[in-house]
Image (cartoon, rainbow, N blue to C red; front, side):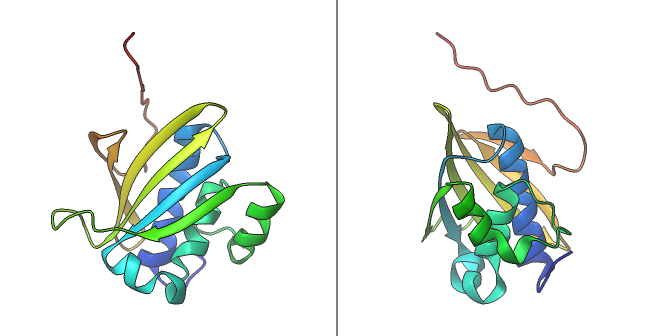
Length: 144
């Protein structure tokens, strides 16, 4: 992994990477809301850089992670960071992201639970609870 922290960088990057896969590539626009200890230490631990790298499709061992801000600019990815309180039931190393790409939108809440491991807690307001370690099919359906 590219450090300095397995929770704040490797896990954060993995959450961004899962979001990239769910939205179908690099998002055009993303709002990133950091919760708990992510909100308190995101700049010092590189959580912001790691999340951007994951959103760009990088895995936690990608040597380009430190260049994520520059690459995001080159890809014209618009992003915004803010802090949020997601409640006491949400792990302190968590992030909520609202992504947009080609008319599609996706809201995701993910937690970095230690050692680079993650749990995707929620997708579009629906409880999820998966790690992203194994292949899976996720169907996001809109009834009309």
